[in-house]
Length: 361
Image 1 (tube, rainbow, N blue to C red):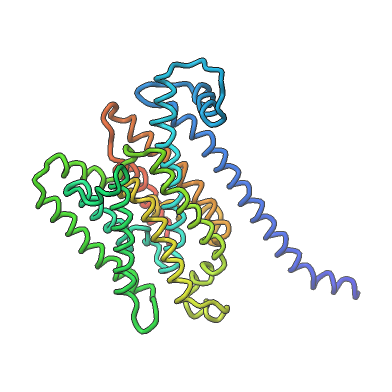
Image 2 (tube, helix red, strand yellow):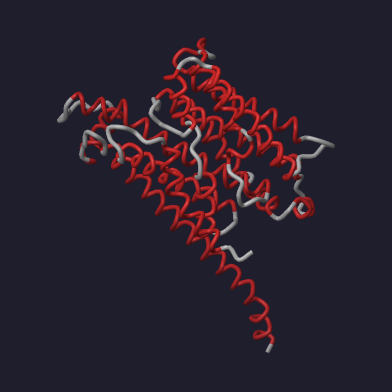
């Protein structure tokens, strides 16, 4: 009798442990699956284009350039196309896609709004203003070949500082105040960008600004990849370490405080990290919408709301999604290229329709 009672008392704990193990196994399965998808997508996307190069040849060229190989069985033009043009572009697509996805996950937790996305805080608008100043009036010329990227990054950080200054009041950062401040600053900076285009007498420059505003990876180089990647990796590590705190914030400030967290401090630190990641991504790719809005919801449907599982799954999914979106942008109207933001919107809108229909409240 005593043994039976003891087993009944232990059974709920064992069931919880079993449920936790199943969820962990499911998460590992999805992470491995999306990692495999990403690894396979990279050589395929590099090989496809106006000049088709077989994935096997792509892999050989990559190994040759990375490990300084000596045996060459392909032309010099193929080597230049793969190594100097397509590889940095595809890798940058993966990095930017992952950055937008993980910052979208974190931001939706911080402001507790399912429609929150990385550009909601005015970061993209600030980067657009900086890019317009560079493309139209030569701002940041002292930075040389990194003038556009540097100007866009400075604009993104400036916008973040303005949002912080406007949202901070009474020693607190509330989610509603952050949203309103981001929207307000975004409108002001978007108007500023439009005015710069209107005031410029360079039609070609205005066209370049418009193309950049819609998102593009045509300017991808090894240098731009080296600028953005370290900031985004550091940002992911920081957000992953704060996963439990993001879980607490997702339940509300009162609950987070009851669990021993400090919502204002966590929100301020996380927003700084998000701003750096988004600023780094937008400065090299322009305004690519829908990735930071849709991918977090898709990842939640797969692994749930726990951020320790959600962040890596969203990052891998976002990386693969943007690689294939960029491939479509290059191929649909080849040799002309479609702005990347248009492709992500066309693909992302049906997912949003599905989520709207799926929501019960």
